[in-house]
Image 1 (cartoon, rainbow, N blue to C red):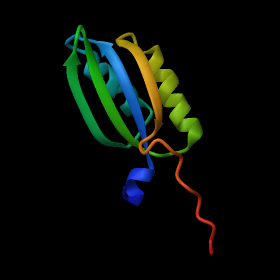
Image 2: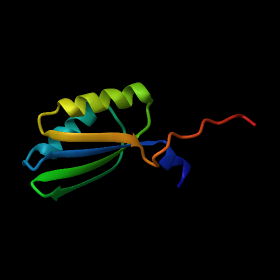
Image 3: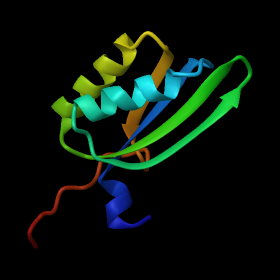
Image 4: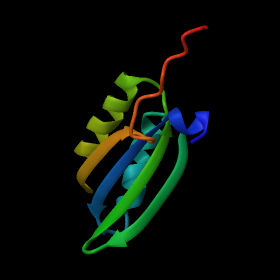
Length: 94
């Protein structure tokens, strides 16, 4: 895993499979000015699975994005965390 990968937050969204669901989710990302690094979306069952990789801008911004996504009418479920599963290790300066 590269250093760049460790600085990304991963948001896994399950949305209704509606024509505007992806646009609504991306609208939230744009509104909060999150820097999108990668996106994947595909229909799964009766819903839409959306995977967003966002450049890390701090815990508060990640939580704000999560709250806004959860409030989005198209979103059914949301999970988020670090792309690699662990928070990046802070540099020790040694």
